[in-house]
Length: 384
Image (spheres, rainbow, N blue to C red):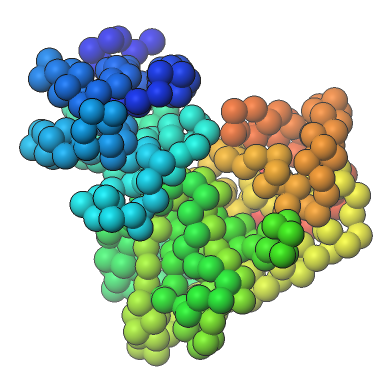
């Protein structure tokens, strides 16, 4: 059990008391100690004078004033913060917050917690002595993480020390992106390639009625469309499903990797072939498998992909997806997803709770889905 002094503290500002109470409860359940919620600028500044928090969740405006003085005080104290606001990030009031993680209201409390977790990792000191300032579950995650891009590419082609150093440099300054943020929209002119370093993102298509079909998950180590710069406009949308750390690679950088670094180029090309093979398997999923088989197949795939990236050691993994996300992936309704998940639980195959998937019987789940990992080309890493 973490003592009060060891808990990371969060200064929370929220002008609507009920929203503040819900968010405060979620933060406390996630292992944070909440200062507030403050409903006015004066109250927030008073709390800040009494204690410097580890992190902060703030809005752009209070009922009595803008948050300018609070932001200045937080930055003076070196406190990382995220914005939770009804204002959009392209609003004029948002100009001073371009480098800050941003969540647009209304948002689920778990989304705010997820972004705060990522911010905590990004802002955490490197020393072991300071590691107690983070929730224990974050310390554990951080300790086992390696660079997922390097791990993935090394499985497709041998890399030199020079290659690894270059890839590490490419990944040095990731941007923290909240859930449900479009990295690229259908119809936009492509602006480089996005690399996902943490979290879940997806490729999807939208119909005029707003219905969505997800046709790929982008997991840590994945690149969003290697050759997208060859297109005049995007033919699909790329959106974060959870809080993500991403890096945008300029088209010139991608061209240099493919032209002057043959081992990296070979690995990237093979990775792209695996993406195409995965899409073929997903087409088989929605076209020829039952609802319960589709979910079973998807869970087997996600677990193996995360294990191959070095992110999970066993048969349990983060799955920050809603039932609507799963429905839009498998081509069934969210009600049907709910029924199918209940059946998978009844058979003793999985547990899925709080955004975490635990596969209780991998062999049984694999048999149900007729899952063969050959399309992922993982070699020995396909063993679960």
